[in-house]
Image 1: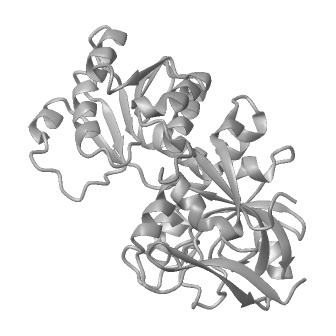
Image 2 (image 1 turned 120 degrees about the vertical axis):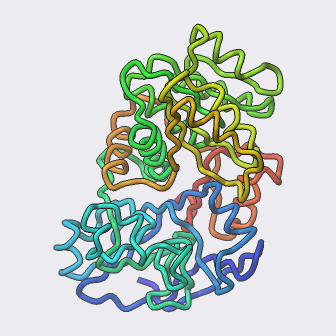
Amino acid sequence: MAEQVLAAVRTRPGTTELREFPMPDIGDDEALLKIEVAGICGTDVKLYRKPTIDAPVIMGHENVGIVAKAGAKWQKIHGLAEGDRIFVEHYVGCMHCEWCRAGEYRHCELTDWRTNPDGRRYGYTSSDNPGRLWGGFSQYMYLPWNAVTHRVPDGVSAELAGLVTPLSNGIEWALNAGGVGYAKTVLIQGPGQQGLSQVVASRQAGASLIVVTGTTRDATRLQLAKDLGADAVVDVLQEDPLAKVMELTGGKGVDVVLDCTSGAGTAPVLLGIDALKRREGTMVTQGEEGAFPDFPLKKMTEKCITLASARGHSYRSVELALEQLASHRFPLERLATHSFGLADVDHAIRALAGETGEDALHISLKPWGDA
């Protein structure tokens, strides 16, 4: 094993540098992951443009790799061995607070970078912190005892496993937060990796009608939505989405609205409130807007709408995502549209942001290339 580790480090907004770090010493309750694939998503685009901290950060929070070195205690804690292919969640909880004991480590103060400046989370944590290798845009990644790990099933490639984060988010948001199930009608706004993952989750759960909205430039993605199980797609620039939803539901509206749009302002939320059925529908939204002037609270409460937050995923959702990938029931490999090497992190993030003219849906960052 080499003495140095090469990593792409975000040094300031919109700037990445390749740096070498010493190979960390691994104790009895620690491990080292050889990164095969680090997925890139919309959150990386946001954090690249507007970092949450000024310190240097190795980004990359959707990480798959091989356990290269692990202490005996770490192996016992995780039920894993050197040579196993695993997916590592980006949360690093304390594992003793009430949230962690309930299995909701995503809410743990130790991993919440929004409220805890010393929080630990892969892709968000300064490389100045002990362990140094806190992100997947690196040849190796440090794994403490409290890393959250999942064994990748046989027959699932590293690149396919790189889709676990968006797929598990789709499962969490659609099924758990949104309550999508048998015979439910669903409107999914935005055909990005999260929205397409929700198509799969909703179809698997038995939804009777799945409608996906997008724009004219999303034509390829809207077709993929249909291939993954959507019953209808709507180009909101060419057709009235509310009128189409009402036509498809016989004027009743849908049971669940899942807002997966990015940078679309308040329009998707307003459409969602109107498109939901007369009483007791559910809307799940990412809530990107810092303010929402003239929010139609009266209409929302009169319709008894439940407004839920789209926030991360649970351990169970990740396990379900891995099972879904292993089933090969859906052509999910089509979501992984591009791959780049470690020296191309800047280009990869800009490609996903739509700055390069490439229609990148989900990008696989491969620190060792395709070898």
